[in-house]
Amino acid sequence: MTTPQSPYDPTTGKPYPSEPAAGAQPAYGPGPQPYGAPNQAPVSPSDAKTWAMLAHFGGIVLGFVAPLIVWVMYKDRDEFVRRHAVDALNFQIVLAIAYVVSAALMIVLIGLLLFPIVWIAGIVFSVLAGIAANNGREYKYPFNLSLVK
Image (cartoon, rainbow, N blue to C red):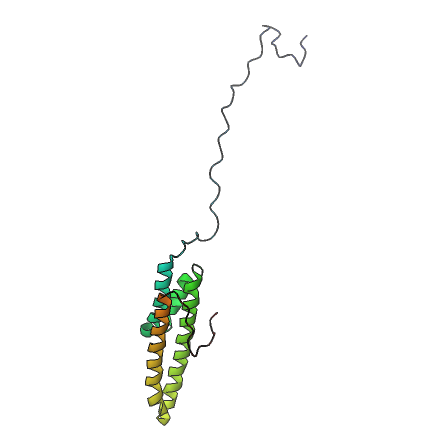
């Protein structure tokens, strides 16, 4: 009679054949990719100055659209560009309001004088702000509302 714990075959006296040894367990693959968009590269100081300057100068040609585009593209990448784009965007909104008021006042002929004054002031202050941004300095428009934060 054989004992159930015996590792030997009772007829031959040899050990029972065993299963072939399994190879090493394969390593786990790379983990899943993180959610969301990949992190964007930081902006170099010279690029930050350039984009801040373009936010101000672009407003002369494209109105509020240029600073809005710069703000959307760089608001999370560089604080300097974000501040300048927000200031330029707020100033362009103020200018748009001034243009509408000027157009309404053209009925009583005051708007004919106000419109070119608003236009020249917009160009002058945008150029001053763009130069300050290119030099790495902050610029506060003389009359600006904080509509966009």
